[in-house]
Image (cartoon, rainbow, N blue to C red; front, side, top):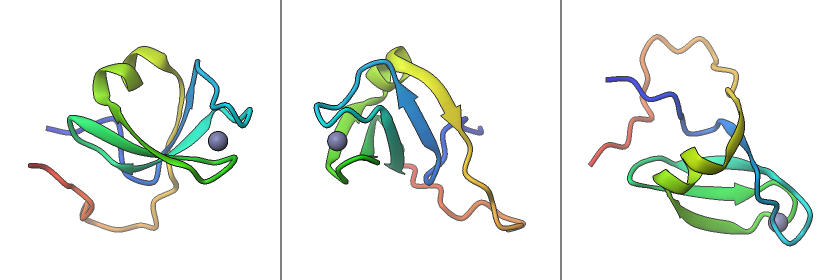
Length: 75
Ligand SMILES: [Zn+2]
């Protein structure tokens, strides 16, 4: 089962962070995502449901030709 979200991807959300930024880097995926604000480096945990709901754009990280996905963090 593949996930459209991958660690390292950048997402743009409808809601802006108070610092004015709306782009977040995905640090962890799961039932909750850990996101890092690209404006002020602040980290937050956000329920996956909220990420899905507020997602405006998903910017896939450029993969460095790795044959296997090693960053699966499934629990
Ligand atoms: Zn911020």
